[in-house]
Image 1 (cartoon, one colour):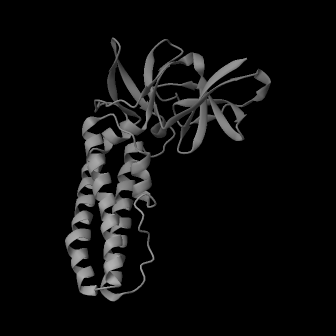
Image 2: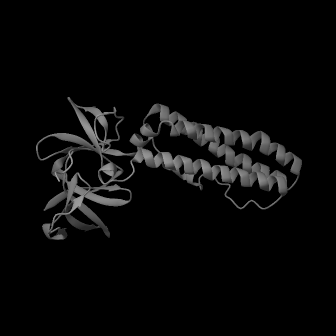
Length: 258
């Protein structure tokens, strides 16, 4: 019988031997270490030790969570500009408005609804973002309803209410984006890994999915050496809940020797 911690990164599942996982923590706010490679996201105090934190994403040569968030914020702003422009066109001309009017249905609304923060500053900004975002959609519906009765009043409602809420929505989205490293920490998990040499380090992942206990014959062992980037080896493949899980044999902070 073997036991593994199953975790996900970018929608893919991976597993590590449970004996190498000392603890699973929320994402940690890290201190930068300029002299380290890009795969090291920083350091933090854990019990009596200062631990380096390895980005699993960077270790497999993917974008960091923070980089992904920064791109996401740009896309969310662009989507809302398109929405705002289409709404203005509809109010001005009477053309049908074909975009959504429910704040929880758009990409930003769904992201806000799924977000949970412990960082007080991030939490306050998210609450204000949610407030103005919901008001934006509410004022949009009011303007569209008024348009069918009085176009001039609808235009005034758009200029006074919709525009104001749109401005504040983008303002607070920019403020959240400015704290992208702290937002990324809120959304990730940090596993404390004990290496074969007895040293410990943090491993930033997207989410912990499960802890499984399986029989040896359920593992499809890799016969030849297979590597994932420069910092880890593949041990086996496991089928779990109808999904393939890549079982990692060893993770190190240092690049594998050529």
